[in-house]
Length: 124
Image (cartoon, rainbow, N blue to C red):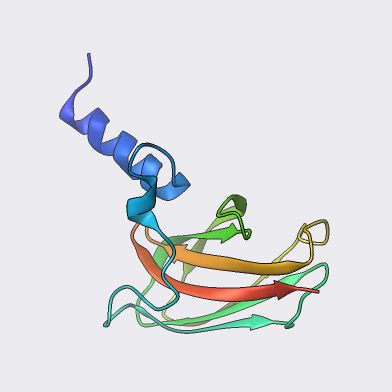
């Protein structure tokens, strides 16, 4: 039996993974979606990256987030969760050396799948 709670949970997973019939509704936006977003700055280093990518995220509150990395065909090639604390947060994204040369989009989303910030990264 499918309940409303199960439907809501399934919708959150579809949004996070960008699957399902409404996939286009969760398209990539190059700017922060919310003008007063908790994330105030994202720096991607080095640019271009080769085998490791470093993310530097400044935020106004502590929260769990998910980072999705898309290739030029809008396919998720890397995804991980991260607990951000208020202030500056730095992490290294490993296992990106095997990605093809080109431009990638990184979405930072909340646990409901809403995009908080989007930025680009170039693989050299």
